[in-house]
Length: 166
Image 1: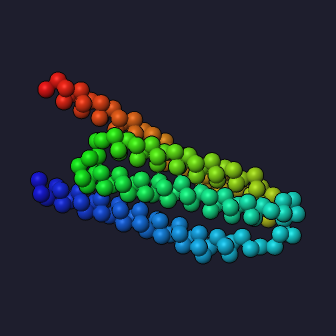
Image 2: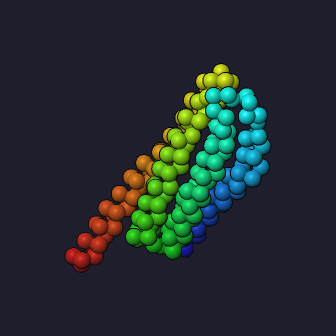
Image 3: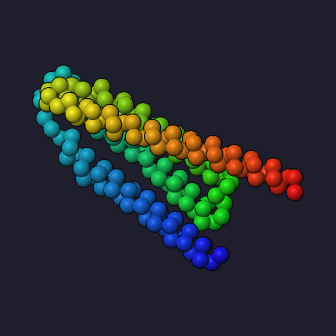
């Protein structure tokens, strides 16, 4: 039993490290890459002069639900470490992750109309495709979190029914 507990601790420790690395990578992107990415000349995009500013604001705004979801994922791993994986707290954390992923996706889809004039000027339809894929990726996470939330809710209900019958 001790070996299983140690193995579980190692796997959650690895996942916690991955969450921290993702958080640091996005922080580095927000601090270093995004400010330099959106300092292009406004005259280059005559169709929408403030498109770069709106895209930058949306990308910074999307970082907020991203970090909330990372924090909830970290909490979920702590619940697993504490043998509280089948609890209402875990269901709540998965629900928050689901809504954060939806929020990120909505923000990125909201960015697409501002990106379109830039794509027209640059004549780069691949950029629009890449942005659309980037906007739909959080929806995959939201669906996965919703399925896990429903399964976890069913498992908790089944466990509580079994506890009542014994």
